[in-house]
Image (cartoon, rainbow, N blue to C red; front, side, top):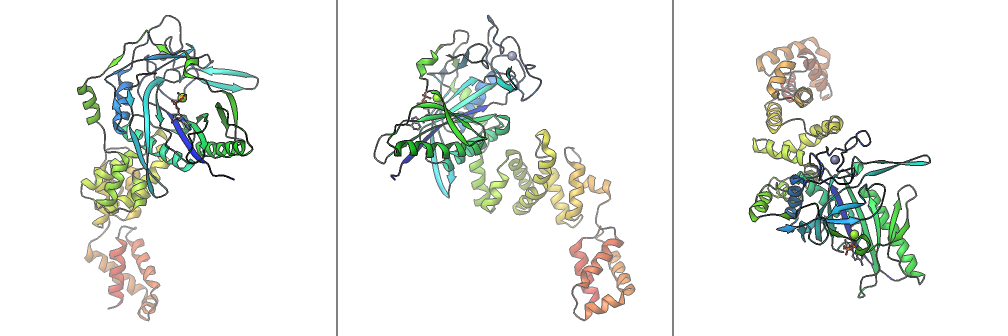
Length: 474
Ligand code: ADP
Ligand code: MG
Ligand code: ZN
């Protein structure tokens, strides 16, 4: 069996999180009663006129700036004509020969090595509606119709399922950091088409197939693996790969051909007569470029090299830009990086996961968190109590110190008072005290427990342990 080189190019669609749709003022929001986010424009009534959403252009340019594209000073709109029930106008307003962003690249790590995938273009277009299949009927929901979508087309630089998934994760991370898309696979706000071919070393690229509309990283991986196996079998048995559009069925894990691949001419692209071209000045573009935040990869590198975090910690903290922002803010306010990282990864991210259903993954500010950390550091509250504090201040603007007082959690660190309590407890428990003096270390926790009980848990356990040991050894 001969070895084939796998060549993959991806077309990635991401919905932009603008307030309104691309060409009308309907709300851009996932879900809702079917056809409740619609108007004559996005429902494709004849004679209506589209009005371009400026924010969508800004977000597309931002995406391009983030990956180093050349931003077009002049780009235009084209109609891509095809008939399908989810497309009421029977054309999609898209960009054909003059997209907003040209070129660019994404760098990421895969299998411990750095890899670069070049982008061919990013263009802006409108999303189509959704078909809902029932028993014996199909209904159509136009809520998604007209939602702004960027299509990012890569060069054929990807050579395995691992690389494809790592690329998609990096791209989604970049867009989330830019604040232009949530890239939520489960809501279909990022979807990928996989173009894949096999060739022998030294020979030109083989015939490709395009598997459409994969909406999870897992199905991208499975579809690639299935298609590599299928094309290998075709070639090995002396056949030819047919250029076609394929569909991957997640349930069965197999792909099947849908139609022979359409060419650009099948879409009869022509310039959109109802929209002006988009003209951007250098100043427009500079302003958008200047609004880019520090991106994920740069932050991860900074966390390991400057702040001394492990690769693992840096990965976890940068997985959500809101979490990374919180970490940066907290450290800026004087928290020790490693301590802030640990606390965020254990407490904040745990809480964000369970309570973040409204999309809020971080419910405290850097100021609130650095306050909690310094109260713990100074021994005024312990870690267990800090969780109650967190609950109290989550998504409010109450300070941690105020919550500590309200909850009556401030630890009793008055050395004289605690010492007296410990002496009383030792006097009341001569047996265990003797055991300790004979070398039974385990009874130490008994005494600490008694002290905690006497102070209702408000003693710093470290101070308590040290003191008990000292007084027992007298
Ligand atoms: P089309 O306009 O027909 O969709 P493009 O030239 O825009 O075709 O390419 C679409 C995608 O297919 C791109 O991501 C590109 O990198 C990829 N691609 C092109 N040729 C091949 C090939 N032989 N094997 C795998 N991918 C390819
Ligand atoms: Mg294509
Ligand atoms: Zn509308």
